[in-house]
Image (cartoon, rainbow, N blue to C red; front, side, top):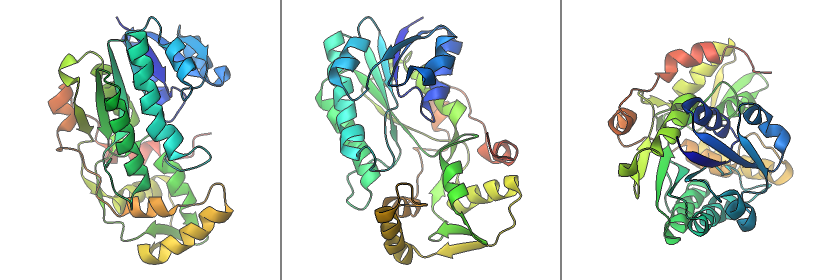
Length: 299
């Protein structure tokens, strides 16, 4: 079994990855700013180190004696921490720390859609982060995921914010294609990647076994929560000015201009069988899962 340092362990996907590492029998070390958030890992035998994943000294010290580092550190919105500080500088800090500590490999979790595009700031920041990691010369694997869904957080929060007054709001046409993957399946891919040397040096795109539209995923949510509100589609060109205004006055707006733009773009992995071709097993179909697991808010 391997010794693994996990960065981003208390986040939406990170929690599932941490428990999957422990389930698999690996030795887990987590670097966290708030040790109370890592209590569930500590009681299962994980080593908890207090520090900041964006502090080079903290990451280098935490990396001593481990064989692999997995990082899920990222932000989807440009505040309170910026894309540059987290999504771009974070991978560089990761790579430099891994090189200094002599770890065998790193796994960086990124996003399908990562590319240089001035209209898509989040995806541009993820692409830049991948480039920064590569520049350090570290041996690693980049796993790009499509939309990751879980019982709580992530897109569930977006859908909850989209229930405005008498309407269920959809940005744009809602017809962008996507390939959602369950959080547990994404976590399994991340953990299994550290045992696959054939993936080193590669960028691997991964998604679920169904291609659906954004509106279909929203319909899963509405059906599960028994929401009867009529859907109101707001054209993206009209919604962006409103999103800009809300972003200017709110710390947590319902939607940002960048999110409007992302919602209009297809988000598909490299094939419907991307997980089975790389890992040899088929992920869960999210459609049937969502109608039961989104049935009520998680408290």
